[in-house]
Amino acid sequence: MKLTFPHLGNLDIILSDLFTRLGVEVVVPPKTSLRTINLGVKHSPEFACFPLKVTVGNLIEGLEAGANLAVMAGGIGPCRFGLYAEVQRRMLESLGKDFEMVVMKPLRVSYGDFLAACAKLVPKRSFLEIAHQVKIAWAKATVMDELECEVLKMRCFERFSGATDLAHFKAVQLIRKANSGTELETLRKEALRLLSLVEKEETEGFLKIGLVGEFYVVLEPFVNFDIEKTLGQKGIYVERSVYLTDWLDPLKRNRILGTSRSELAHLAQPYLSHFVGGEGQSTVGHVVKFAKEGFDGVIQLLPFTCMPEIIAKSVLGKVVREMDMPVLTLSIDEQTGRAGIMTRLEAFTDLLKSRRLERRAV
Image (cartoon, rainbow, N blue to C red):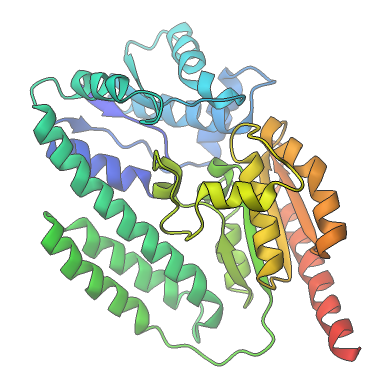
């Protein structure tokens, strides 16, 4: 069996490493591109949300490259994500693709279903061996998230444009080499040292912007037009509301972010007191958190028609008024153009700079 999966940030590095260690042949689809999106849009229902279309494009490209086993994550709650895998299976079968689909449901739904899916993917390995390799892969993913968090904090201070990204690339290649927990810890320190060597310059009065919203659009750089890098290279400090391991963590402790899902729910409670699916409630909690931490503004990213984020957006107006926190909402689908996004980002950052000047003048 040759296994493939959709892209999501650094997920391809983690999954290809994990399954290769377990003896499964992996076919990593090409990085998400315009061709990926065009394929997904062509074969998906028009009303489907954008992440479904993009991930269908990834799966088609993976199957074209020779894979015959597709892995897709499952979901829960009032969000269409929970139906992606079944919809995608039917769509791909209607295209005549000969493959098998395995759905990895969240651990918090059922440990039994998770283990059964693992057994289907690697039938010749014991659960203990699978658990051992998953533990190593999880540790690697956590370190990679830690590096991404560090990159976000330092990119706006780099003396030479692109130096942080180059150091980050080298750091990730180091982490990929780790074969054990001990080795990983050694390489983690070396990776952090590489990042610390990036030359920085003193910057005064830099803007601070928080990124919130639906996890797929926030985590997949091609889909969000690499918004983190764009803002960082303009000298803007950026913090993100979700990291891959935080999203996957069944207990939602958000170790990389530092604020658990329950703490975010508490922050959101005056405005949105219950779970609405996806990251809707967390988005509201994050905006409140960024406002309390003195950020200049927040950008909400969502796929067009994303129900949980639309609910969040409907209450954010009250947060904006009561906490004086500007929020720019960017709804993204296949019709969204880079030029339009860049223009809106420029206008938003100009607004934030003006507010800074007005406050200093008072």
